[in-house]
Image 1 (cartoon, rainbow, N blue to C red):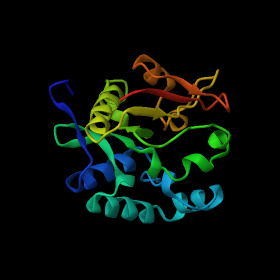
Image 2: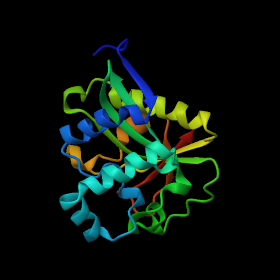
Image 3: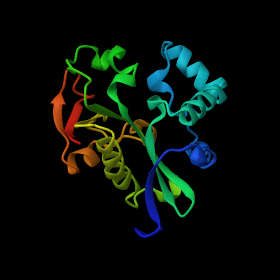
Image 4: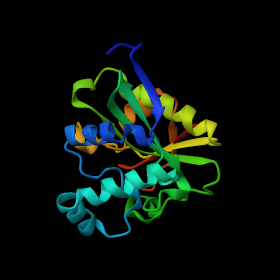
Length: 196
């Protein structure tokens, strides 16, 4: 991969097969539906373990319909989908305000605020700048659709985090891209912001 072959585009129906292959390569069965799942944690874990097809089908239907719950950007190396970042209007991130770690946080009005919900980078492309390209491409995508603020929810830990623990994006990536702490009601889960 070179900078010339990597490009970032909004997720579209034509990317869905490659998008699914990315999730499969990362052994990730959520298909980016966690933020929109109405059930509790145990019901979510059951679905992710036993019925991941439901999550993929819901996301694919939302992509095809242009539903903002499915919005985000993919990183492409040639024609291969090698990365994904969910970036959507915070108003459609239904689970966010109900999570115990954010429930006590005054997030303010949703108007103009876009949430970065997750990152996924192919194992073969980790450490090559894909996440940074997704972040900047996602910011441009959100800005073009009226975002004035980007919000992120990384996990903070004194210990090194495993790859499955940084699905909301690495804290250092956000800090190096100009994000600052907006709220810390639950310190291991700060809310970060920057202008879009």
